Every structure is written in structure tokens, then in C-alpha cells.
Amino acid sequence: MSTIPAIDPVGAIEAAVAATVDDALRRILVVDDETSIRLALSRFLRTRGFEVEMADSGAAAISALKRQRCALMLCDLRMPGMTGLEVVPHALAVDQDLGIIMLTAVNDATSATEALTKGAFDYLTKPVELPDLEAAVERALARRMRTMERRAVDHLIREEVSLRTLQLEREKGALRELTVSVAETLINAMEAKDVYLRGHSVRVAELGAAIAVELDLPDHVVEQVHTAGRLHDVGKIGIRESVLNKNGPLTAADAFDALTSKRAYRDPMSAVATLDFLQAQAGALLEPRVYEALRVVVTAGAVEGIPRIG
Image (cartoon, rainbow, N blue to C red; front, top):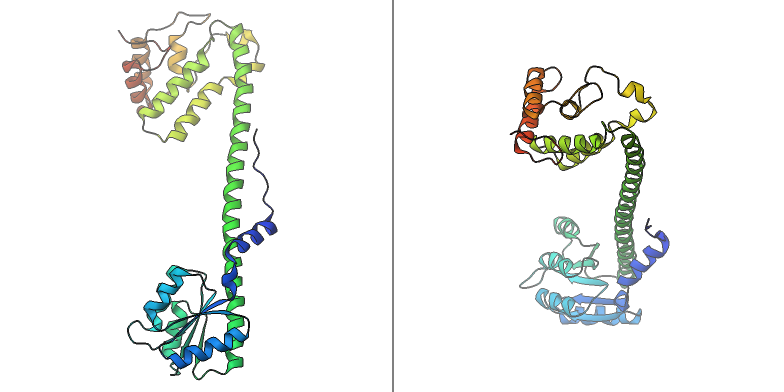
């Protein structure tokens, strides 16, 4: 039986994060329609070891993000054309891991809340003190990294659950097949000793499955009925042959095959006589809907080894 290799959680997380962390970690996009502000912010960030790209509008910012990946975007709130608030969702659509810090000359709580709601990490009021800017950038980078790690962990967990579920289903299937195989081997051995039982379990399984299909039961239920029919006589393995061949009353589950099969104490009944007999037992020996399904299946002659009408 094939096995699914175990996943190293720590290694998988590190690999997932490493796959998304490249030189973009130190690249920042500065977006502002005022040239002096763009240049001032860019000069300061470069002195702190960052690679800086600049854009003078929202549209230019989106184009820049599509050309080259950035870790952060410093974006002015009020710009002609596309506003900073409008830029945010478009930018995140390009790169979901992009950290965004909004800049504005107006200390507007409503705009700040809306920016954060749309996905911005932080909100700074101009003129920005350079130490405050540097601190905000470091916070945003750290938050970006945590977000990426969390996404990597979530992906890992989903993948691990999927793999383990698949492995469990395979193991359950293998165990079920082994159990049924062992039981069938014993049943075959038992039926080989008794000419009257030979092939009985197979016929009951096929007939039961056909009735289940006629009743429009789900596929998994049809399979369960077939398996139950194949194994329904497994308890006879430990019973003496003298008891098995003794004349006695019928039980529910395999009445049709029992009545149409030859026994040591009687000859088999015809399919028509058996259906007539069981019709009288509908509501007692058989559930009426099951009887009707049985009648349809037998009349159609769709089950190999089952006596047919006519």
C-alpha cells in the first residue's frame, strides 16, 4: 500500500515564505502628485537602505506595481484623477501581499478608517516626521511578513488536512477490501461444501444492489447493500451443516433467492410463483416498496443468475 510522505511543517513554512520574499522586500513605491514630497521621501528612504520607485498618480502607481513587485507603497490620499482610497483595492488586486501606508495633509478620521478598511496598514499625516515615517515603514514590513507567514501556514494546514484525509480514506478502503476479501474467502469455502448454497451470496448481493438502484438510492448505499448481500451469510461459517440444511422458516433479506433455489428438503419455486408468494407477504416479510422494486428487477431479467419470468 502506497504511503503519503510526511510534511515538515517548519521547512514548509520557511519554503513558502522564501518563495514570496525576494529583493522586493526592500523596494518601496512612493506615490504623490507633489514632486517635492516624492523626492524628499525617496531620498530619506534610500538613506535607510531601501530601493525606491516613484509615481505621480494613482494610474502610474498601478502600472508600476504591475511592472515590478514592491514590499510597500506610500500613497497620498488626495490626488487628481484616481484618489489614494481608490488606488488601494486596485493595488492589492495586483499584489495581495503589498503593505500600504496612506499619507495626507488632512487629519480626517473618516478617511483614515476607510483607508484601513480597504486594506491599508497605516495612516500618517503630512508633514511626516522622518523618525515616525521610518517607524511606520518598519511596522508595515513586519506586519507584511506576519501576513505572508500566516497565509503560508493556512495553506500548509489545508494541504496537510487534504493529504491526511486522502491517506485515511485509502487506509479505510484497503482495510475494507481486506476484510471483505477474507470474509468472501470463508464464504466461498463454505458454499463449496454445500451445493445448495453455491453462488447464493453473489446472487443476493447482485439482486440487492439492483433493488437499491431501482429504489433510486445513492451510489454509496447501493455499494453498501451489495457488500451486505455478499457477507450476509458469513455467520453460517460456524454453524453445523446439519443445522444449515434443516427445514425451517424463511428470514427477511434473501427470500427470493432462497425460494427459487433448490434445497435439501424441497425443489425450487419458479420466479412467477415466488413473486406471487412474496406479494402476499408485502407488508410483513417484505417492505411494500422493496417488493415492487424486486418485481421490476426480476421482470426485467437484469440480474445474472436470477430466475426469469417466461
